[in-house]
Image (cartoon, rainbow, N blue to C red; front, top):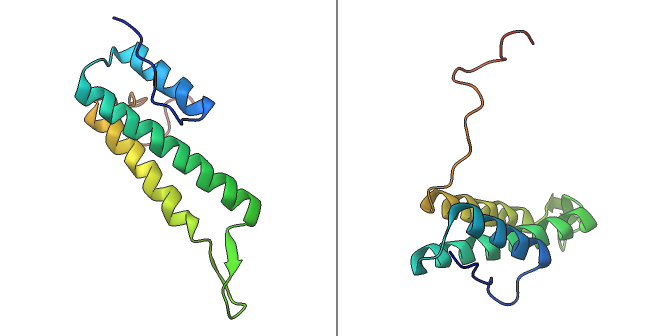
Length: 107
């Protein structure tokens, strides 16, 4: 399987995530590559939103001087949701660490 280059315009971190997922899971079909592109773009969007929120704070003042939640919080949440949806559509999941709820025995 040939490694397929990520789309232009992605950050270095998104390009690394693209390469890791593409190589690890052998994603090379057109639909899979499109989903991977959606993941990578959402990855960058979430990262950009988080950087702005970290810089400006979780709350901002509105035109009346009242504190309100930073408007990018919902954009960050939505981008993370798009990332998870793309991973789910690619059938990439997170391994379950425990088969039952609660703390593992011995801890």
